[in-house]
Amino acid sequence: MPEDGNEEQDVLDGGGARSLWSGAITFGLLSLAVDLFPAVRSEAVPLKIVDSKHRLLTRRYFCPQHERMLSRDEIVRGYEIREGEYVIVTDEELESLAPEKSRAIDLRKFVDVAEVDPKYFKRSYFLTPAESEANRAYRLLAETMERSGRAGIATFVMRDKEYLVALVSENGVLRADTLRFHDELRGPAEAGLPLEDSPEPKAVERYKRAIAELAAEEIDRAELVDTRTAKLRALIEQKLERGVDVERAAVAEEEEEEAEVIDLMEVLKRRLQPEEREPAPARRERTGKSRRDDELEGRSKAELYERAKALGVPGRSKMDKDELVRALREAGG
Amino acid sequence: MARAMWKGILTIGEERVAVKLFAAVEDRTVRFRLLHDEDGVPVKQRLVEPESEEIVEYAETERAFLTPERDLVVLHRDELEALEPAPSREIEVLRFVPKAAVDERWYERPYYLGPDGDASELAALAAAMRETERIGIARWVMRKKEYRGALRVADDGVPMLIMLRSADEVIVASELGAPTGKALDEREIAMAQQLLSLLESRFEPTQYRDEYRERMLELIRAKAEGKVIRHKAARPLRVEPDLAKALRESLEAERKRA
Image: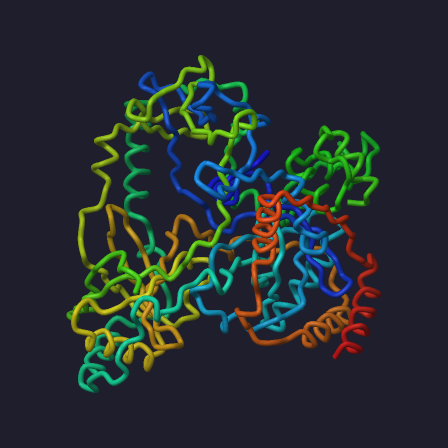
């Protein structure tokens, strides 16, 4: 299923219960399976689009030539080389561009993260241990990095895009901050900068006094609230309370799977501390399965597919969920 | 010279500095179009009511918030418009904090600041900020949207405004619990620390290239010329499952390299 650039960004922005990527961190010969989740919420109050009868709408692809809706498998990805002329690029071709090695976050360099200019930072993700076997290696790496105060720098390929990341450890949790590649940033000279070098000493003093007036040691989260979002939330609550413009949403069949709305924070807590939050040993004993099997079966097909991709399981694109679980068990993942 | 994307006035207490914003990011994403496989025509997106398959024009739509209980709260266009902030040219600096007070997760998108007219005031502000080693936290309204930003001076002396995410977006990380388990082996931590210190270095951004993007463009060029593309077979990584053994062998290998 091809995705264009914009959509890909949407996929990576999305919250929800599913991880965005499953892969591995390698540190020397040590390897640990991890899942990647957003560390920032994408939109605080996401709004849906409805029609005049207030029915929920979805976006579909439409061929203007055939004047009909298209299903996902009727769509290909094309790169425009001349006006109206496209080179088709398949999923398999894109996949072949990333050698197996580039699909892991291989920590080969550690730096002081304070050295990284803020203009490089793009977006943050939390990494959670993907399975109980990864727990010890995860904690070892997090502890080691936290003690050293260093961040690991690596590049890796996730969902048809290469990322440069700074891997940091904070309070025992690993986080990947994606960084812009150097050529994605313009130099100040292109904006007709820098400025003249010798400002008036008097003027500098004036600004130093103004800065001192506003000096504080910490940021204030209240100052960083989006007031439109806060007002929007208040409006929604008011309407709910008064029962104005409130209707029951029809449940579309295809939507049901995603209907469960889970806060990102809750998802992260569950993934980081599964023992304390999922006391379900009875089920494990009854089925006689190992924990690892249960872990695989509890995953969505998309997650299993990502893991299969990371492990290079052949024929994965044609497998259903059970087949993926079996193949992953055989591949040791 | 790049064109300014917006003009504003920085306000710091009583001080006012007229500035121009210039984009510091250059988008290099390889953009694909989605095509219908049968005729190669670029597809369009349409809004559809899934039950009836009816196409709905954008102008006839409304917005609604869906609660976790699946109640739909309809928000009319005029109500949403009323939430838009009043237009303003002011970039108000609220406070100046040490650089470390802003966690990396807040940073979103950088802009350079240039003077709008007389350059001496902005130069004086930049010099004052360098001396105090503080960054400003600012708010402003641009094109009907509210923004928050960090005002800082880059190493080359150029002032920048880096957009910050809103407090709603940034999770309070200290509320997350770390994974727990049996106490770690101090000898293993010591070995891991040694391995890490062998890999310590400085951050050199020019060292990294988006090689995947380069290979993608190469592939497209080759296909455009009608060349046959050979797929490379994937090679699995070598991994040692025993933690202590993995650390020992990695250390040995790294010492040999050094």
